[in-house]
Image (cartoon, protein in one colour):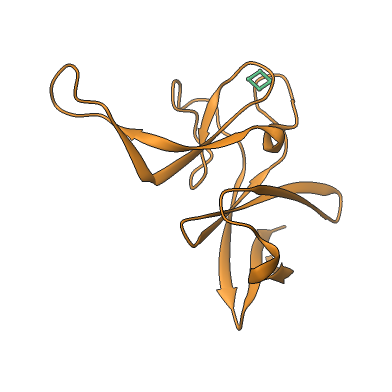
Length: 120
Ligand code: FES
């Protein structure tokens, strides 16, 4: 079973900034990055830091050869403020070890409102 939660108007979310919203008992970080919205649980899976107090950055794209890593604006990450682990905004997966993952939620824009899809 899932619920759709209205997080606010699109204009309330500044580009490149993570905002934390309280959704029942959970804190959810919501980011607007290049016009797209992402949502993550505000708890780092390493040692439970408030992950969404970290910085948003472009992700990386690995090339086939040594020395060909490039930044990727289409795959943003958040860096944890305590120890710097990075997590993909879309999947919540850690960049360095995919066994670590923060809960990521689906987000959609409907009639100018940012809607969170939350499974119960
Ligand atoms: S608590 Fe987030 S990287 Fe350690």
